[in-house]
Length: 155
Picture 1: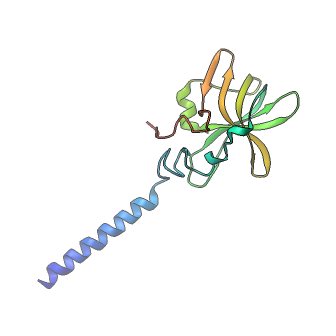
Picture 2: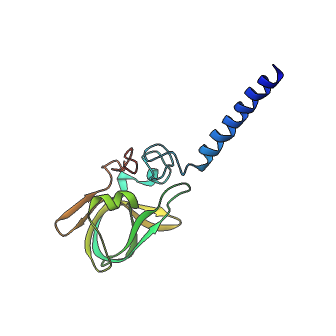
Picture 3: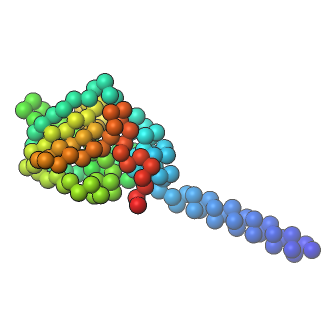
């Protein structure tokens, strides 16, 4: 009977260790649910979007880069936009979402972006709501700043 009790205790400990390991290994809680892989509506980065500071800028794409906006979030895509008045980073969305949209941007492209002017890491930036290139339009967020990919995951 003692051996059976030890066996049950060992199984319980093993189950706890496996569960803790699996939870620790997860990259996040998933888009739309806090600070997950894609940054949903509830993560601190997405809460930076302010509908009161929305503006539309036109210009030329200078560079396109990947970045990580927050801890435990997947890579996002941003580009540097050169307008008549300034050169400013424009944050689009998670790379996995961008790849699904079919609209690619490259240095030299002429684009129009609508989004919220914010301060990111002490510098001005735009968190894009919509991106236009030629006749193509990519919706990234709604008017309140809720990401289009919130709750979609990497499917």
